[in-house]
Amino acid sequence: PIGLTYTQYVMFLVLWEKDGITIGQLCKKLFLDNGTITPIIKKMQKAGYIERYRNPEDDRVVLIYLTEKGQNLQQKVKDIPKKIISCIELSDMKKKQLYDILYKLLDGQSKK
Image 1 (cartoon, rainbow, N blue to C red):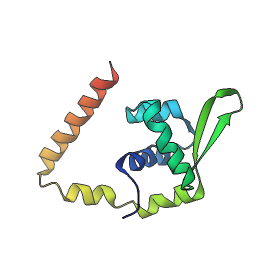
Image 2 (image 1 turned 180 degrees about the vertical axis):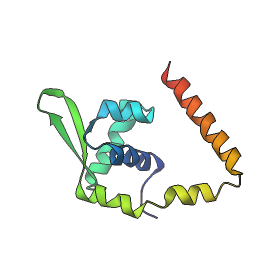
Image 3 (image 1 turned 90 degrees about the vertical axis):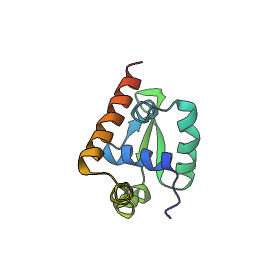
């Protein structure tokens, strides 16, 4: 309903947590490579959600910042996690186990 893909949504989650990060940091947080992230960033910039700037200290580094439109989107999507979790018919204990397993998998992937 808000016109975002899943990958765009999780990119916003990272940027709402820490705005002004490098593309490399974004890739690392999302476990995605630069070739996957770059076209998404371009689409988000074209839609007016983010801006890209070269780091003045190192021209090779690109920083990603949310625009006002990107910052305001956070309020519109704040209920998405609650809606997702309400679709999962698991006990609280099972939800916690699933959460723990997913993060163990992600942690294992980052050690490769």
